[in-house]
Image (cartoon, rainbow, N blue to C red; front, side):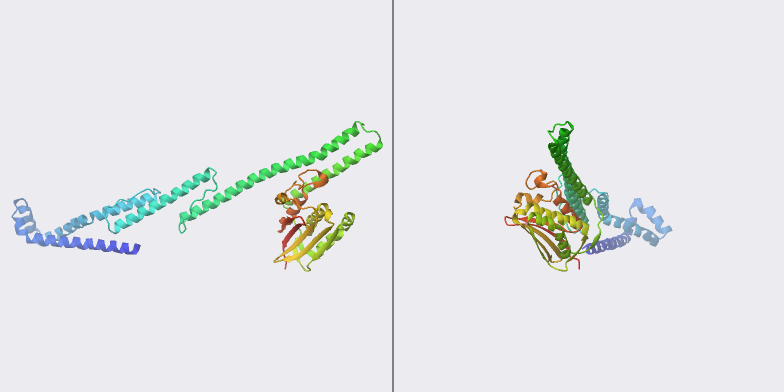
Length: 405
């Protein structure tokens, strides 16, 4: 289309040139034919006669011809030049960023079409820039769900898509920052509560001992024993908290190939004394030759937590089932107990730090509230995933790791 318009403009300019030449030639012929009549005009008789007698008629015609051509060419192209000038001024305004510019041409030819195309382009640019500006104002006010329409096939569309992506990332960053702040506050609250509870008990019993408010040595030893147990619980909480922080801050991993069937068998053998003491039977169903890459020492900690959790809360079922099986390109390790189920409302929060299913912060039933959080961190930091499902029959914790071939 552009090539056709340019070709048409070239032909029109050639036509105007030829027309000017023709008009000039015709006027020369007319002037030559009317020379006798023109010489009869008194005002120009003497000067024209002098030019013809002294210079000659042919030189006079040779000078008059170009003058007539220039005059006729100027008169015939004057409107064309004015239209081109208007288009030039409009294009310069657009180049300067003034997209509300309009080129007003009355002609309906190719120049008019070009001006109309430029006007349409600036209208579309102006409208799209208005949409982008409105979207940016909404984002600046904190409305991160604002979406700027993306017009495919244009560079402004790419700009709009980049702004939308920036808005999404900024919104996500703000949410993460807020969540991090809330998590930090929750952590401080949880740690403060869990440290203060045993510490208050320890100080209370030590105060009784310090003030000699015990009846005999038996009561003294009783108070000392309680203070010692509370101190042990306090140490375990501090150790778990330190371990959780260390894992989440990126502890160095000693990655090695681990045969999971052999790994779990050895872990069960180390747990036999506890199983015998609680009267729980542990059954293992394992596929051989399933290998993953992980830090063995860290996995021991994670799976010890899962087994301890199954013993603590699944004691009424008197059985724990552990399974090692392949699941596509992953290795699945599951721990199932048959005790009381985890309430459905608690399942989404079971891996949160300091969260206890029974809603109590008593260490006698809920541990430190960091065991499953530590397990989740250990599993995920090594590229695995952990999930839980629970119903009236059973509760299963399952971990999955990429299978190493």
